[in-house]
Image (cartoon, rainbow, N blue to C red; front, top):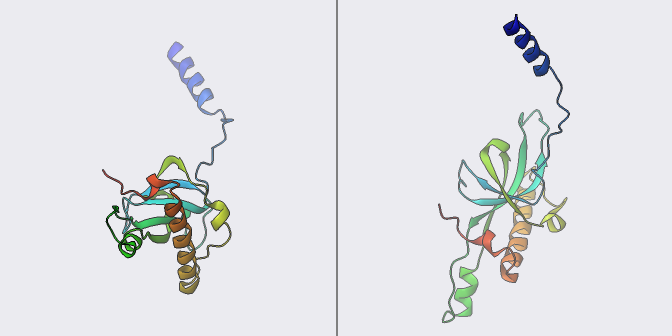
Length: 155
């Protein structure tokens, strides 16, 4: 009888509704590391997040802007032209399934510069958006803010 009673209590407790609400932590500005595809192992920032499923993308996804090519080391003896060439940041824009990136604890405040200006619906708009992202990332690197974001990930 006691065993049957514990089964009833277990079933009763397992049927309770939880009052906890799922936290949304994949917000624009969250730094992520891509885990699959061409840019696996590269750092990126979430620009737009979509939890809802659509007909063309039946999964949660995010538009991310990332660093394709990190700037190289520069030293004092180099010419200005060499320093400018080695300080270039290569960028990419990609819509990524939530399963294919690893969120980090870091955030970048890029939403002001990029909010509402990124559209990847066709190739010409995507290339314009990529130029804008490159300009923003280049300015960030030049000013010295978020220096860790532009360093190559060693693992």
